[in-house]
Image 1: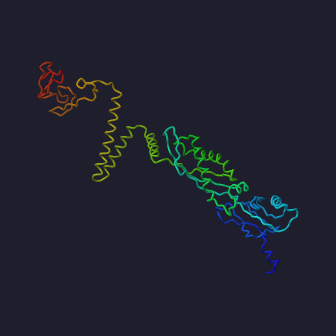
Image 2: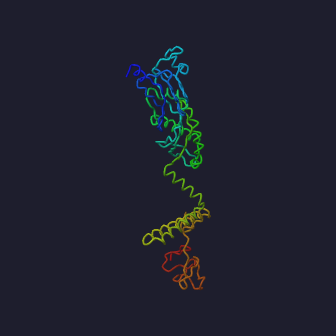
Image 3: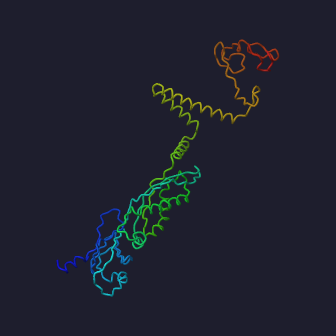
Length: 361
């Protein structure tokens, strides 16, 4: 190989980058200590920008197109090298290709729960996650703030910094909006737009745009989720007594279909619901009715000492407490009684006191 052939092999006359990656933001053209030929062809494809750097100083930026490198279209580099007009000798410079396409499906998520105050449920904690897209819109700014002397920059290398911006903006945004917990699912788009507008200014400081920000889900703790579901069930059912009766009927139906001991358990569960329903009804009646006091238990409501119906010894028909004759057969009730010596009221045999006047017997 002659000296001229060797010199020619050391000159770069075609500069281009074919991007086959999905995550490469910046790529340095491998010059391998070769010099760039004045008049070399520079190809910048759509979705790319080319940046020339001279001794660590950012020089000219080329947008998509086909260029023949001359001092006329490299004004900054020409000034840095103090070239005169028409200079056409080979030169050294670092060439970086910047990928200006959109990088979609970048993920974000809250590592720690966000604590908020809700008007209905009080202090609550939630987590959220989703995706976003980034795009380099200011190659010069991005290169100065992010690239430096790196040979290549991928999305993974700046993911941590961007995620911090996203989560901080989301936390502040959702806190200021004060959307009720039950309405969050319907407000994902509204929250996303508000947060994206806040983040755009910070992203632009790095030469980046944020064309898309999506909230996929906002999660609440299991305890709060159960409370929300229970609240919805109660609103749907409406009347608590009807709900209790329904649960009792369901338990009894399940008990009939379950063999052995499981049936008894299900029946017991139904009886428990029925008892609870009865207790709630009694409590409601006690609050609504006038509080009559018993003469035998001072301070206690009369409902607490109501006597059970009296069964006729002859026909077994039930009779109201205090009845002397059966309403079914006309037979005398209270067999085994004697009149009180003082008030003549019927007193069961063996009683020590009259249940009407208290006279000792």
